[in-house]
Figure 1 (cartoon, rainbow, N blue to C red):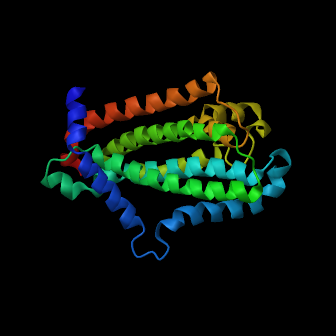
Figure 2: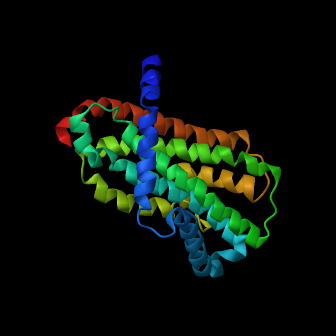
Length: 258
């Protein structure tokens, strides 16, 4: 373990540079730059509020904030897992030339997306102010759902980046899977409206409990209970352990397959 920690610390500056590169590349030649991290979720919130409010608003108080809380969590996971998945293949030339700890590539992608996530909370704050949503001291507890979604996304990113080197079709299949995942996450509907068996599936979705926790601390001023904490921690731990295990078993074969 000490070897891995020393190795990580030795390359932490490289990780920072990779994150800076990803952030700069994403907004290169963009007039508004990182402002799009605020404008995009705001625009999507407005459109989805108009589309879905007539269907769901009768059952959901303060629908724009409810929707935005789900969006910021799922959008981060979607972006982070998708870009991390192609990180090894995208850096094949560098991997073949010099030694670099290969986990830095998916980690840097997730970290660069994390910068966008933090920026998107500005959009959430704008919606909260615009709708007059009262904030409680529990808002400081949003660090927990943010930490959980980061760890879950990192674990999934490591897993997917390792698998896609061998199974290239996963890049195309994942677009379908992530769309299904979005509809199985209670972003714009209340989980109570679902029939029994569908509700069970949605309840088992790791992102469901993270979204629920974010709504509790922001919208309802509640301190997340121990059960909800454990429901978030368990899938994060599984994703990280599985992702690291698969990645380290496969990383020595990357150079032969990329």
